[in-house]
Image (cartoon, rainbow over all chains, first blue to last red; front, side):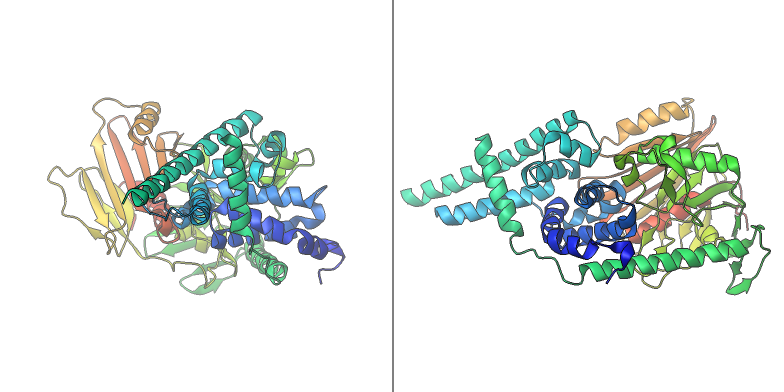
Amino acid sequence: MAGERYEGLDEWVAARGTSLLRTAVLLAGSREAGEDLFQQSLERLVRHWSQIEGDPEGYLRRTMSRLAIDRWRWRSRRREMLGLDLAERAGPDDAVATLDLRDVLMRALATLPPRQRAVVVLRHWEQLSEVDTADVLGCSVGTVKSATSRGLAALREVVDARQAVVTGIGQEERSS
Amino acid sequence: MSNDLENLLQDAMKTETADVMLAPDALPRAFRSVRRRRIAVAATSVVGVLGIGIAGGVVAAGTRHHSPQSVRIAGRYTGKSLPLTASVRKDLIAAFASAQHIQVSDVAGFEKGSAHYGRIDQTRTYWAVASFVPSRSASAQAKVQFQDGPFVFSELPAGGWSAWGLLTDSGGGLCPSEVPAALAQAWAMSEPSDCRPGPAAYAAYRSGRFGFTVHVPASFVPDAPPTDGDALVFQSADGRATMTAGGDLNVHQVTPGQMVIQLRHMYQIQGTEVTRHGRVVTARGTTASGQTFVDREFVYSTNIYYVKWTYPAAERATYGPMVTEAVASFYLGANPS
């Protein structure tokens, strides 16, 4: 489809596209925004395909991460981040509570500042090392460490609060 | 606990994305978009080389060189395309490097046909648009910084260039929303139909007390003038956006450097940027409630003039160009018309 200039691009996108799209969804905080982010990044990859030296996956991941935290392009997308309402109540059933906790966690992830979210996604979804994460984001390893720590702390706070609510409901229902 | 959270997080991310699949047309769409972009850039380049300007719907051919072509907007402001000099090139590269946090040595030069430079005659403000190409010695990380663009730059009357914004691609071509209207026409930048919004009409407001002139969207409604005459607030029809234009006597002899500190104290909001170029200090940011604010202060020894905007961050496509126009039109003196 793409000719010599784009040799290998079709195959590469077919092999790696879905996986990287999933990363984009997590980086952007919603499915719609993630698809948009991936498409923008893919366009850049196409434009620069013949000039990319080395690993195109690293290039696309770097592009997506950077766009996701880019203040100009993504400022207006903050509206799409889901609000977190800890007052919502779930039943005490364990399976339901676990599902609910996942949902709460994903919503909490979407509300992290973009750089913290990117660090958490790259470290815990892409399983990149601190050094590789720093390379992708163009920051120091120290920044990655502190952003990871702050991001996880914020998520832990939400999870703990949620578990306290669920436990409280369970106790109320048992005693009634 | 830490491992529990990380395991739960990984599990949640896996569940969340389990049914996310790449659409079969993702790559063809990317190719179509790239082709459209190339066509749009090429068209702009050809028009620029031929020195063609569009005035009031009439296309006038100029010389082969960049002879200045004046275009009048709303009978008041005129934009003039100027030849890009070596010193301006150097300044723009430095401003780009600064904005993207890379070294000047990472920049090889301008993307062919992407650079435009010009002036709004009445306000004596200079603007430029350019995309850049990386040098061979640039690192992979630095090269990523070149993907954005074209960049819009503004030079303030007191000197210094700053990256003002980016031209966005609507899918049908580049939208000149960050470029003052007078120069967008002088540079023959057409607006694809899918850019939002359409060009707004502006009215000139002159402060009787402070003697400056500034453009205000014609659809904005002025509040009743304050009794002390210091500022006037204009509101959008739905009241969701406001523009305030006013001034203060600089009784404390505040310097531009002190104004930077003042604005940093005033806007203690994460992500707020305060920049200074000569006498002009600008604070931009977004509040937790989703309101974008832009506060531009012009600091002189006797007076401080200001233009302030607030609007919903989600409506940047609508209000961003209006902020650009208002800032570009600020002029110490009577209405140029």
